[in-house]
Image (cartoon, rainbow, N blue to C red; front, side, top):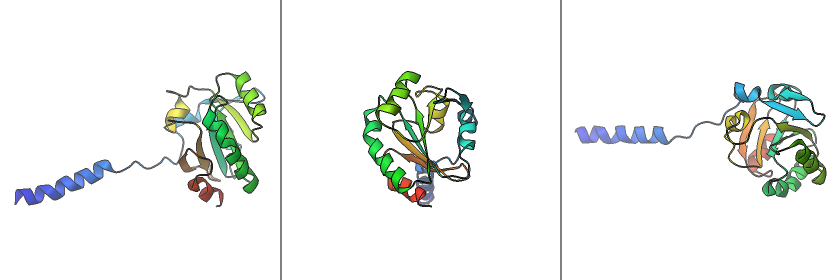
Length: 166
């Protein structure tokens, strides 16, 4: 009898322990306070950057000019820009210097809103808040500024397109 009661209990415990965590719908307070640098050299916090685009859908592209996968994905982003022109395309770069970042934007003709992330990729507040494990990385923010789509590594991911169509 004890074995019959133990088996369902073990199954319930196993299933509940292997459940996936839900994707976050907002950035951590630490990430929102992370410093970003605009192309004009203005430093601001991520929360101030995001506030500028409230009321619009935002595709966030986390990239760097030294990243081959990021460069390879740029034509897919350009295709999205053509198909969804009302979306804000926010490029957050992990380039190692302002000079490399600016040259990369020009060299690859990256059109959109650009900011250089102030914290490090590994162990930085922004990267940790989104569990950054690879770039490029794409997120979609809804018109209220919430994270509507948390994780994609390809710009043509169906999850991105579904959010941009809304």
